[in-house]
Length: 204
Image 1: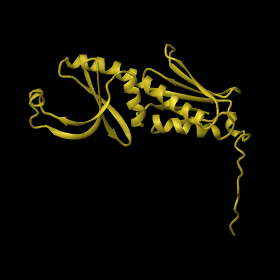
Image 2: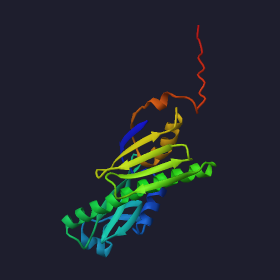
Image 3: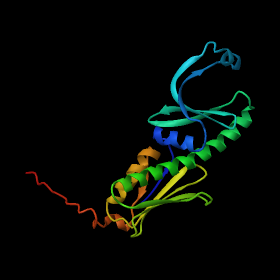
Image 4: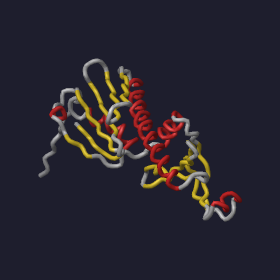
């Protein structure tokens, strides 16, 4: 099947790993909101938001608020003009999206290897869109995950018959999606691997 969805940061551990890989200095901190820059400098009259995942990169402070199970990135800086904050923030979030998807696919790969199967991830970071291919075994089983510049993710499963393809992508989607649109391919209707038995109960 093929799936398409907007990327969401759903897994805090994967997000922490992605930030660490990009040297964004992630940590969980109590975050306070101040009405003015002076108040922030003096730690005066701040409102505690809560313990948030935070980071720092290129003079930009990054912090994530949680909304409906997803972690929403926010950026701010006390040393840059607003337009610079916006421009650098967009670049940072774009880099973070790529690394987050990469870490999510690698985590899925690790779980497959832990189950006793062979698997490997091939990254094409210079491609448009950026593509991560998870190859399972040596029989042509693949999950291809691509990420475009707008944060849209496309998954395509090939070589896996029946509902096993959904089992494979559902693990990834728990880390990267809130809602998913799927298109079924002919392979989904093949129940060779799944050995699915339908039990029909007649009620009188």
